[in-house]
Amino acid sequence: MNNKKLDWFLVHSIENKSMSKTILSLEHPRSFHMVGDWFRVTQYIPGYNRIMNNDTSPFLMLDYNAPWSIPPQSNGYRPGVWFHPHRGFETVTIVYSWEIEHEDTAGNGWVIWIDEVQWMTAGSGLLHNEFMTESFANKWWIQHAVQLWINLPKKFKMTPPRYQSLRKIDIPEVVFSGGKIRIIAGEYKHIKGIAETFSDLSLFDIRFQEHDTLSFDVSEENTAMLLITEWTARILWKECSNGDMITLSKTGTHIHIEAENAKILFMGGRPLNEPIVQHGPFVMNTEEEIKQAFDDFHTGKMG
Ligand code: MN
Image (cartoon, rainbow, N blue to C red; front, side, top):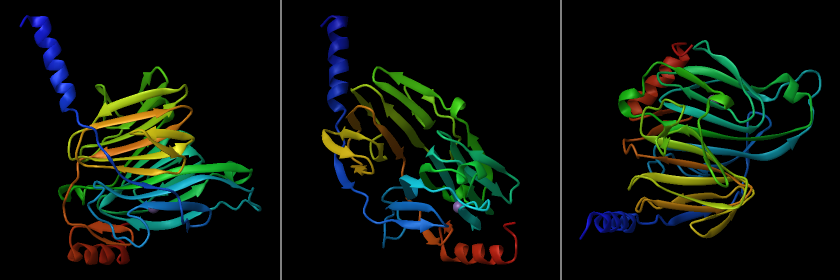
């Protein structure tokens, strides 16, 4: 066999080993609940009447605020969520359309504008609030966002709080013929995402303009999920539409997407597989640590 033939052989044997993932579940948006006032979300992870678990690790929770038109508020009122604590994980807010002003007891505060992301590491604990900006609250507007809770590995649960404001212009993009991939976290074709993370995970904001296909591989045994946030797409040849949440099998590595005019959020990562004990806004590894979190909150140690 000459070298050219050998190359061909190697490339094709590698391709053949790239086994496709399969669709484990496809959920349509059904129920909604309110977070604070006016944050109208559907919970896909862990889902209604389910406790937080390792099935989608490191992702603990996904609340999706599908596009929703809200009327102007009167008297300078700003809908939102008042000060509340978190410990043991990270909250990641991805804004498609909204303006959310944020303030926390670690001394951070900023606005998440359209197409921006806030990556807040609660770690050892803090209190924060989340409100619409005044200008947003004063007009008819569409709110559209995702909030993820991402677990911290056991050894980082008590890391000091950290705040990453990921600006639109700073999020790296990989262009393909039909659109682009905004790399929020992880790596795509050697382009590194902007967010610093505590475990191996990927968050891609995939945007199709023209009709095209996109395929990529992720590590075997990694969690892989897709949320269609705009229009329709074929995920592994299955027709999906906006608001659909697709969970893929852990086995296999290959993901194939076909779409046009669509926005798709890809969430992937290496499962942490450490014990999860959750109570309200605290996610730790043991009951004892949860009790400690409540004590620390009530004695003002979180700020
Ligand atoms: Mn919060």
